[in-house]
Image 1 (cartoon, rainbow, N blue to C red):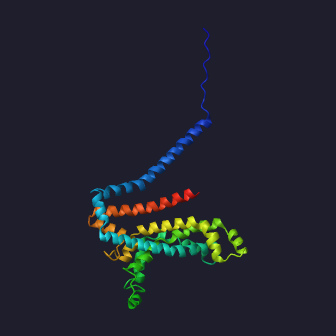
Image 2: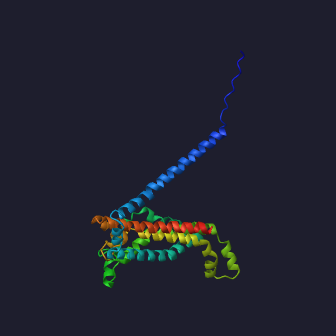
Image 3: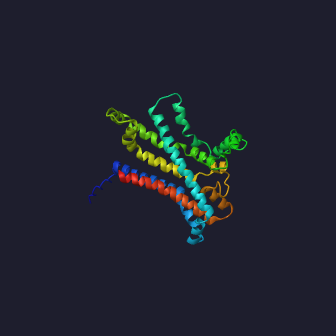
Length: 284
């Protein structure tokens, strides 16, 4: 019998193997990122929900309706709104000066914007005490005038302004650099004033930088703890913010109130960030 020659095995194409490997690498990378995000964001949020509802919805709502907590929330929002208002003006001016002007110390100013990322908020609060405290550099002069900065709202506002300093400017600087000056120069040649050029030409191009800067500044101000604790003292009913209330409630083992307040703060910040991104994508 004549043996038939066996068919040679067909080797897989190198391109197909490469494509399959790329698909699996992409899936693994996506899975790792999703697991990382779930571990750092979804898991703590789920823990807050479980803790807030551990004694039922009524207990959580009752905790949220406590006068001390409501006052702490309003105090937090008040500080956050003032912080946003100041940074909308001053942060815009800083971004404008850094992008549109060249001057000695420009690089130093640009580097100092990121200082709040490197300095602990507790250190910031302590430095404010050294300046504005009773025995601080300016403390005696302020006491003579009847002004209080440390252990009062002005000190807490200053601390929050410092820790939120970079967000508005860092959102606007790249937008201004990409926008350029050609359209502004064209508006000026057509007779537009500086304010008209800003509101009608520059601001529309910067609006989403403003939105993201405001959202990040407001969210960061809501969650500030270390600096306001040191400079404000966390006096119940006077200088206690929402985060300080959470700290005190945990210390007093009022877990439902602490988890409920933390959940509200987290949901507000999450809604601000997700909402701004959603409307930005929708406009595109």
